[in-house]
Length: 365
Ligand SMILES: Nc1ncnc2c1ncn2[C@@H]1O[C@H](COP(=O)(O)OP(=O)(O)OP(=O)(O)O)[C@@H](O)[C@H]1O
Ligand SMILES: [Mg+2]
Image (tube, rainbow, N blue to C red):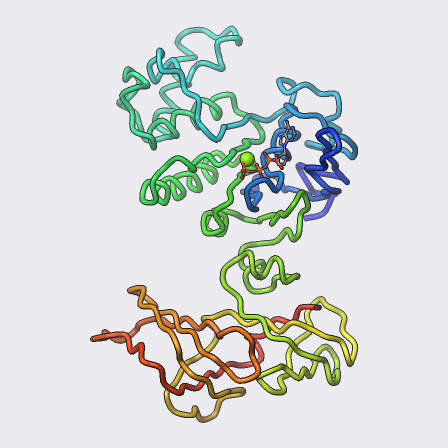
């Protein structure tokens, strides 16, 4: 995604509320038809960014472009966007049909045309029989779908969704995630989706912007964010990550030889980070990239002996915590429970950890 083929562009956008800076120099591009998520902890500026895109909030400096047009001075109702809010405000005194048609009331449409559009929306959200239901006689998930239909009927080019699934329980939430994704593919419009739930962002998105304290830390596909985080902050925000301290001893092409505390000498691809011999680095390895064995393994690239001191059984997989000499925190390892087990063996015992260079992510200290 470049600025040239972007549908939405943020260029050096800053936002101040008085002296407090809520958004700090954000630049990013969102493609046409993309399912794009803003992911970050509470208070990092996700809603602020969305509200500036919708025009409910002004930018303090910088510019937002939609379809090549600068949005400064363009009021919300003249922007090709529509927003679905965190606590889906559907009107309790209206039935489902009138709720969905609400935004159309200012457009002078023939009644028959309007009814057709509503029926089409009811089909799309898989509630075809619900037109006459009162809004108060709906489940949370159904209400959420009505809120979506009410936004989609106006055929916006961009739909902004601020934690639309936040109020739903886990099961309904997972079902709605799949429906939302399918719906987005059907209608083909650009979604900008806000969540603080990393699993939700990974499941739904084409790309994700990871945010912290008003900044965009990394914008990437779910796979690249997980497998190739660019900073320690992103690596620890998405999933679980083990970090080890290391020093670069030599370089050969784009491979670095690193002396790692507790693990010994490893070689790993530098990726995007330019390194020099003598640099202090963080070596990062995901828990599932380690293999745990009771005996010293044969034919592996790297292995180290440790002491299992904690285990947790989670059904499909188990988590193990292994202390290794020279490593300050226990190493987290996760393993799929392929064999049907009688009991997870939790008693402390010596174990071997093995891994290979492809598992290693090198991050500058
Ligand atoms: N109108 C305002 N005046 C002053 N500060 C504000 C205002 N709106 C938001 N803020 C502050 O800006 C920061 C970002 O707020 P924002 O609502 O964008 O966070 P968020 O990422 O959406 O958080 P959450 O996940 O809790 O919804 C917060 O520190 C918040 O307190
Ligand atoms: Mg918010």
